[in-house]
Image (cartoon, rainbow, N blue to C red; front, side, top):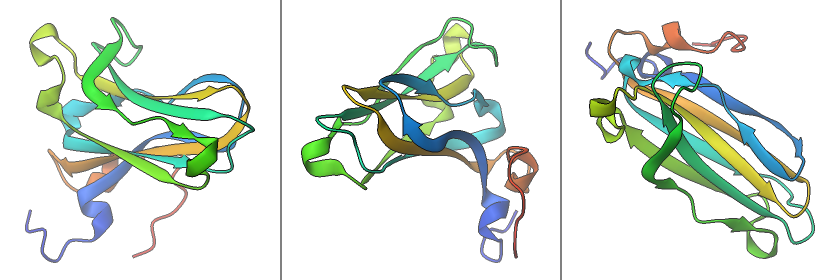
Length: 150
């Protein structure tokens, strides 16, 4: 597909989310994303106002199926911890190419794990699939995508 005249939604799809909320201390996971549909994904973490002395971590995990079988970390795909003192209302991004998964071990699914530490904190995340194997990317958007305006 010639991408010069393509709309952004033809090249990237919203494929995973951690909904915006005041998340309690602990881990919150996105849905599993099938990497065979995309060349790469980009996960964006949105820190809102973090709780008193709170921390926010994020990493990618991989699995062999959409149920999370054999889940393990994707090597090198974790952000530097965001902290209350300096990181309210900041963002962090993680890029991951399909071949960075343990493909020889049968791993083809990825999810984002957000971990809030110490105090409840406002946060959210989005995962975008880029360069779909079959266009348009919007065919792979989550069912929660209510509208695309061109």
